[in-house]
Image (cartoon, rainbow, N blue to C red; front, side, top):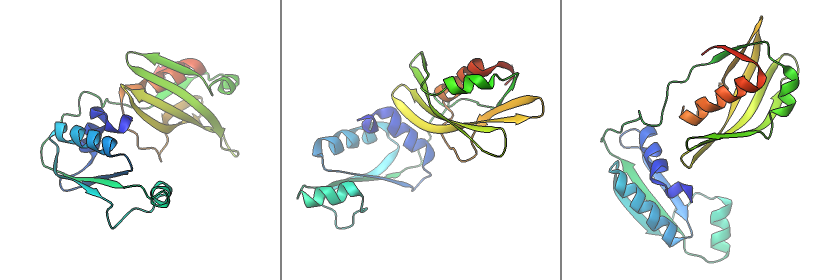
Length: 195
């Protein structure tokens, strides 16, 4: 249900270029209707259309299930217009952190820990280690006012200090909760020396 949240639709509008499109398939007419209303409210999209039983599908397992159950399938599609959107409210400046004196025994206690503050929530889902050196990936869930993201934080030793940064494969929005995750991880593991 968070997909039809206005903040989620605004985030889609922020990442799409003019002319880029967003489409959504569902077997729920009510859900598509709510999503269409959220899309309209942003003012960031033109040509909002809803098709019933479109001829071209995306071939997901859900679509196959709906077809097998002979359900109606609804497709919402819209194109990004040229209206500007203010990214300042949710997206923050996020740089890496350097941490001294990491207590590696605390890494075993990171997974499963969660923290919350001011409409933000962070949970560390798991910790993975690269076998040939001291590099760790911390699977992280962050939630900002109902908008959730999963990504990995990289922890690597650089001479006498440790570097905490987003994994190079991760492309989450740099929200307040992502920054909060960095701070909480540095507090669990050691003393933050600079951001």
